[in-house]
Length: 473
Ligand SMILES: [Zn+2]
Image (tube, rainbow, N blue to C red; front, side, top):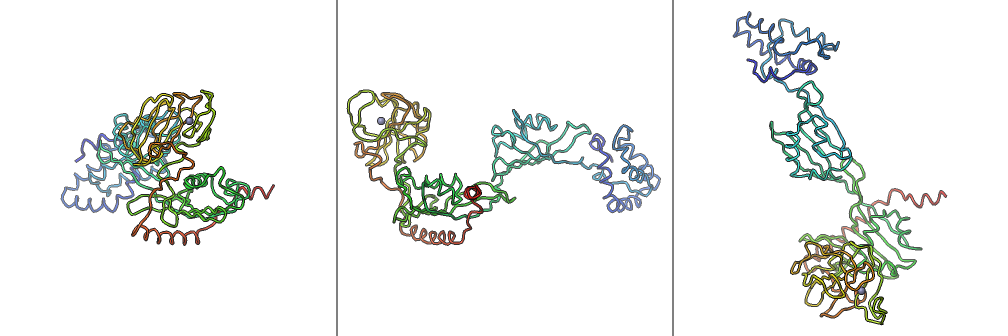
């Protein structure tokens, strides 16, 4: 009647009492049935022997001295108590939940080992987990919820039954045990509560201060500048009296905690008399971009500045050459930037040249269409994917700033070539990006109206800390 497994498994007293609470109803009916079939004497002997077989009565067991347990244990010897069915005896030890954080130098396996999970078991768990989560990405302080099941009364011997972690605000990875040596991992997107915020203002001194005073968070302002940078020169193109409007998302998790700022849904820069509204729109094909009221994308086919955070150190035109000493035509733009700064493909296209090119040093040239090519010079090195014949997307990294060839310091020399002749990247009329037409344009029109409505009903920023602080001073 008692299986070997039952006997081998140590029993912990607290469960024993827990189990007791469920005994009477289920157990009594079993007993009544047993009484009907078995001679009474055998049943009584069974009751007398069973506790000796199943439970460890050793007095060293601390749980035994728990005064709360005492009366209940005594009641186990009451004669009418029924023989529990085998299933009821074979109950699992208690599971417990523990929230832990990754410490310095932790790997998932050292962390699990510290919680008493055996190495082979941790290995199986991590292997299953790696379907959705790279264990090497474990961050210091990453929180993990472990569901553990003690195997013995010793503290350092636990079986992992489940595990939950959130590698990012919006992703939850869970791991469940399916069988003795099988785990299954699942990935879930955490529900997001999206709240829209609208604000705007008039630029008195500069855009940064105006945006700050209007409650535009810094990352949202950076994004606004990025969106408009195709058309607006933020160094020189903004004047006092210009205005801006913006509608952006703030994202909260399902627990109501602020997660991060989302997308800008609508922006408008009023430069002098000219309105420049842009709408974030996803086409039926899935292309997301910012479009003006005519359905023309703000993005151009080529970037004027294929590098981030660089200073324009030399413009296009005649200049005294810094090395050669005589006046020479400079047929590109120079952007000073630290060595290793990524350089982007200015537009979609195909790499047609890559290699040493005299004074240009390490050099890349991209053909975008039958009219335009762009060239990038003095690179320290090329990106591994930037090979001759390869297609590249706008914004894809193709190489890194260096000072190879005839160069006085780390910078990018950038050229736009139209019909094989260099043109001034700051002056050239850029080939435009996407233009919405027909049905897509009609779809965009109704989307635009919806966004306008959202703007009208969105709330203002909750508080503007900076301006409030200044008033207090
Ligand atoms: Zn140059």
